[in-house]
Image 1: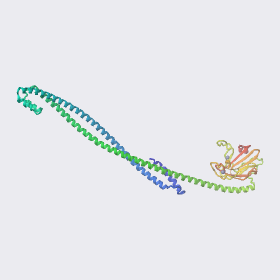
Image 2 (image 1 turned 90 degrees about the horizontal axis):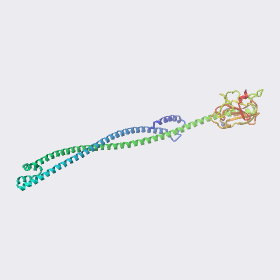
Image 3 (image 1 turned 90 degrees about the vertical axis):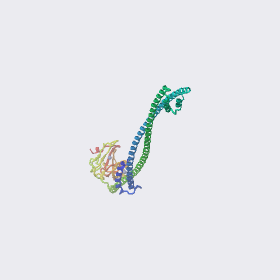
Image 4 (image 1 turned 180 degrees about the horizontal axis):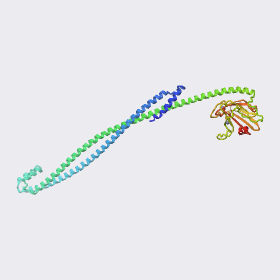
Length: 433
Ligand SMILES: [Zn+2]
Ligand SMILES: [Zn+2]
């Protein structure tokens, strides 16, 4: 069963739902209470089914063990019945043997009697009728033997022989009688065995039927458990989908709120700077006067901390410029490092805040100013929050050209200060040695 392994999901979901419930209501056609109630009931049901399945399996095992025992008994009984049959067969053979012996003896007696009759007939012809009538009138052999007593003088030889035959026959008869009684005992025993076997067969049949029923119950339970499990999965999937949507909406809402805040702040600054710019353009502000020896001036007066140098490796090439930044660099004044003509500017980036991907404005420089100083030298000032000059404008050394910002591809407020000679970047620090 896997109902247990889904539990953490439910718990985590409940927390998320509690958080989200106040923000979003009835976002989807999805009843979270109904879902969790049904899920709970399914789990209860599943555990009952599991218990029943366990019981059924135990019972099947018991019954199968019993069945095995019964089958063993049946097999033992069958063996004994076969042995009994063999014994009966042997006894029948022996009885037949004895019968044959008895028949032979009878035949011998008969022969003897016939011989005697022939002799008696001879006596009759000679005239001794009394003895003859007595003997010929004998009802059977034993009667004959009694009567023969009367005429034993007639033939002692025959008489002895007949008596010997009689006693042999009696022994054989006794033996045959014993064999018949043995056979009867074994047949009785065999009948008992067969009755026993029939009884056990019946037990085994009942047991087999019961096992079939239990197996069918087991299959039904397994089906129920499977269906229960599938339904739980459906509910869990629906819940997961619901949670995913909720967290997505929460995330979007947070992002929108953050963006709105940033844009609001940016707009305020833009407005302020636009006013400043208006004043500055009417009255060019020289922030730092040029030096007597006419050298380059630091582009961001009062802020000298470098967060990136010319040499810093940026994956495929070096930075090729200076990044000037500190805790309150934002909106600091940026001046022309040297007199010249503004070649180009960009002022259309409104994304004046830290970001981890480029908004694309100004080719990543955001709002910038580019000044041609003559002699092949050009300076670039990137990521400005506002620009105070326009392309084609002449600027003096130290004149205000804009304000530090975080436009374009910038993770936070800083001035990107870049120098080129004949189109090739060089380390700006060499101008300040
Ligand atoms: Zn932008
Ligand atoms: Zn830079």
